[in-house]
Length: 337
Image (cartoon, helix red, strand yellow):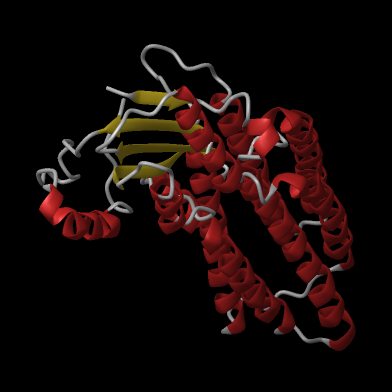
């Protein structure tokens, strides 16, 4: 009944709804990053075994988590490019959200482990002084991790899955830098406490930086309104359209880390708009809010039940109904199939 689907594929690139640098451009970055880090893990493990350094062997194991993080992010990006079918009509785009969320959890677990190790050493049960070999290998780690992080720097603002890979590598570059600096201070000045103290500070800094990734990916997992979208403004844009009395059953959510979807019922008591009206409304939403897949349905009066099972509001209760729905739309999502 007067529904208009606007997939936005023709306009996504032009209006920048998040596909400007599409995931395909990062295949080479993921491949290079994985090869670089696997090579570094092998070198680190070899030197750790030859120098009998538990610290290097442990760090080699930790750097394997970097490889896991890169594989995870790449898998999410690849799955997101699988074509939709009759069973999965949105495709597998949500895999990129799961990858970003899991990457955030991996980082938090790794930093929790680093923080615990640092606290243990601060209590004096394991005072470790970094040797020259450890410092040299950690220096190489800075180069490898920083180089890999730079491969993903361009897309970290457009795609939180890419941001997860970037944060994973940048975090390890920071940890490696801490090892070099504190190792030098421990060797030259005998300050063994500097190493665990610096590790604890670095862990806290990385946790603070990762929290945003965890929060954003969790919001996407639960069909929350993406952070870059102001739902009040979206509603205002739709209600400003000529002939629209009010907006009913408005939902905005993410199907992937770069894909946003909107559905809404436009209550228009007088007249039926033509395709030109719906196309203009779609373009305005795409241009202003970077929403790629838009479905607008025109009705004379709201008939869909409210999310949660409440009946549609009568015209006399429209103001109260709209206020109630405005408060609830963040937490509920009606499945439009």
